[in-house]
Image (cartoon, rainbow, N blue to C red; front, top):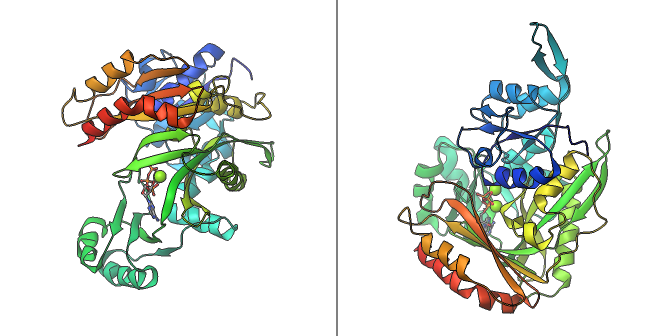
Length: 411
Ligand code: ATP
Ligand code: MG
Ligand code: MG
């Protein structure tokens, strides 16, 4: 890893902020493209930052001119301009007015980002590679949407999930269709979007596996290193808690999930970390929900659980082609992550923060992360990680007061 390599980061939210936190002790400079007061800029002063939107191609080019390799903290980015930068380079102006073209690598590859941006195409691609996914059906938009949703209802039965192909996160872009009566409302809400129908997956629990991927200069997979699987809890479509190891399932489920996740990430392009969201079904199967081609909410706990190689350090190390360990062995036996979501009032979460600061115990630890974001209802404004040297059940019992307050804030 060359300490002089500057990384350009598209998006400066909490994922970018934690990437900067792990880059700082390594002396890796990160130039961020986002608004002036973005969380990643609040903790990382840098003359290479660019102020603007990561959706603006001109700003992306300006950022690329300031750095050696580009990466992302969000997948909803114009891949046309990333392809142009990765393939042809970017124009850089010298002090004397002359211009040269500079090569700037993009990791993960724009190809991965383009595929993943469209959830229908993402899963269509995976399904064709033999990866287990939920059955899906393309839907018409506009006037014929109702008719095509009736076809989906006949094919899948109720309930099924209506999903926007693009721009969805935290469940904004999903609508559960429970009966014929929901269809009219679905057209009025989703009629202007390009959508698809997904068969309901009767899952026992949801899992997530983060995989580090490296590749050679020709784009062939070099290394695939999975972190231990975690159980994720989603409430109102937003991740509220994460458990490592998953509760109430056989230990080999984690290995089964790691295998599927690695087979998914092998089919993608570029270096970095990739989160694979999975369903574990009641009949013991692992089914892929979706991929995030970047550090992920389900891997925040790794900062403390795998301190020598958090998902953020792994992202930096992989894109800079630095040395990675053979396997990722946690330093603790259990970990829980609780998201701090904004409540009804700007200070609703204060109680949760104060409680987290007050909790101490033998063989267990509580770590608070606040992102410097203004509180809004359901907005992710921080998280709490707990680690333990005992069982996940013991740690969960210790975490109960925090889980209870987080639930109360959501009401
Ligand atoms: P993210 O913030 O993870 O990007 P998203 O908006 O892309 O979220 P999904 O991951 O598609 O949304 O779905 C959000 C949640 O909805 C899932 O974690 C799961 O709890 C539920 N869900 C999604 N698809 C299905 C399905 N086919 N069957 C049952 N539940 C589902
Ligand atoms: Mg998603
Ligand atoms: Mg998801």
